Image 1 (cartoon, rainbow over the protein chains, first blue to last red):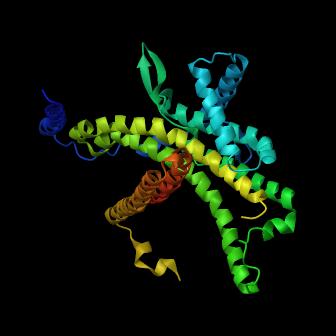
Image 2 (cartoon, rainbow over the protein chains, first blue to last red):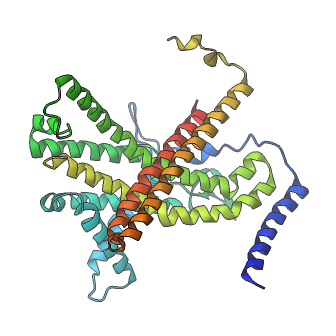
Image 3 (cartoon, rainbow over the protein chains, first blue to last red):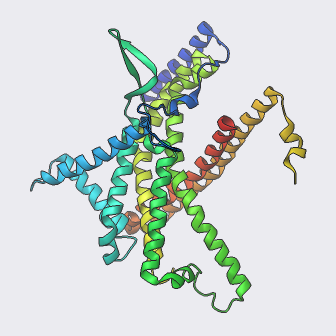
Length: 302
Length: 90
């Protein structure tokens, strides 16, 4: 049997199973009980309320703790048992270290500043990477729906990521945003730093035009707050939503069993895409942009 | 302008409301994907062109390529997120 026949046969079975399911089960009509947004609902596990402040321990906080613990544990563990002949794990971590040190930090700022900011950028990269990656491991965190195993009520397996909640990317972005402004003011002084926002070559322009350009620059600095946080948040949230819908959510929502057979193989494809590319790429982008902003704030001229 | 004077704010029919939300999500996510798709294609096309002209630049172009890819790709998600907000939260 040639490869072409095999591919055609596989595709035929795929389509035929979907059509057969459609003929056997048909459509149950729209399902109103299943709410996809509840997969991202945060249930309070340990309620802590300080006046208007809500510091309750919930799913997102657990993932945050997990990611920080993993980052610290993995890095110290590797650093403790550094060997002359590196094994596979050490080689991988050394590659990642090299990426954060030479590519992300070293490529975007001068040597002195890079030495100062490398710990922050490296930690940022690894923290976001771990928090994206554990977001794709099914963990028993769904307390809304429980599974009964030998009479014991256990929370159902679910996937969730701390970065799929806008608060965590937003707080990381705020830290980055304030630190690059402080770094710029410290390097250049208060007034020269804000003057440095104007692109060079505008010295002969009239004050109104320069004011207009300065306003645009101010807006662009505020847009960075939105773009940096929403990029990470939306990528991870969209990935999780895709996995949810492709892995059966769409079939349940619309009540058509045949749709499940059609979308389920796509869930595997998206899972590989998310784990293999998006999780790492978003961590890389976030730390690279941070390095670019930090480098740009202190550079002599843009 | 007073927003309540517009007919859009006066819709009380649940069916029409649901249809409007579905259209917001579909049009938002769909149009956003068109733009980002063109942009991502453009980046990879240009990168292939550059590597074909100067193969020795390949390793340097790699990180710039991923940077450009992620920045462009994110545009699709901005519209998608606003579509989701319109669909679920309004």
